[in-house]
Image 1: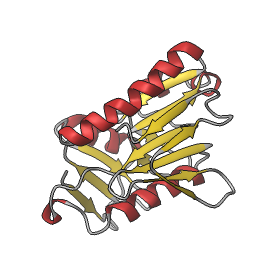
Image 2: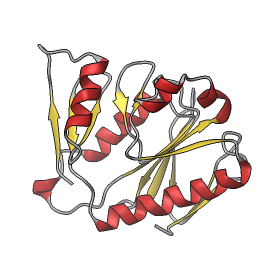
Image 3: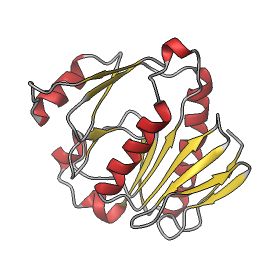
Length: 197
C-alpha cells in the first residue's frame, strides 16, 4: 500500500471541502489527522484485504446476533470530535449513539467517534512502498481515537505477532499471538481468536 502525507500548514480545508475531495476521487482513500495533515492511501493488497474481511465478518456476525449497534468497514470516514477525519479498518458504534445522529450526519462522514475500532497493520510489501514508520502512525491514530472518546480499540500487528489494546485512562496493553481478544463490556460476548488472520 502506498501512503502519502500532505502537510497543508497554509491551506485549511473546511469539513465540506474535505468531504468533496473524498467524493471526487474514489480510487484513493483519504484521511485527515487531528493536526490537519491529509493522508492519501492506495487500496490494500490481497493479504491485507483478506485479513480485514475476516475481522469485519466476525464483528458483523456478533452484531447481527446482539443488535446492539452498527458495524462499519474501512470505507467509512468518521469526523472525530477532537478533530481529524479517520477511517478504521473495522468500527462499531452503539445503537443509542448512532440513532442520536441526524439522517444527514449518518449519510455523510458521521461526526462521532466509534465506541470500538480495529486497526490492522498492513502486510509489508517492500521498503519503497511503506511510510517511514507505519506502526508509529497507527499508534498515533489510535491515540486520536482515544482523545475523541473511544471505549476500546485493537491495533493488530501480524508482522510482530502482537496486539495493542487501547482503553481510556489506561496504559496500552500489549499481548502476543496466539490470543483471544474479548470485547469486554463494550462488545459483550464478542471474542476474536488470533492468529486466525
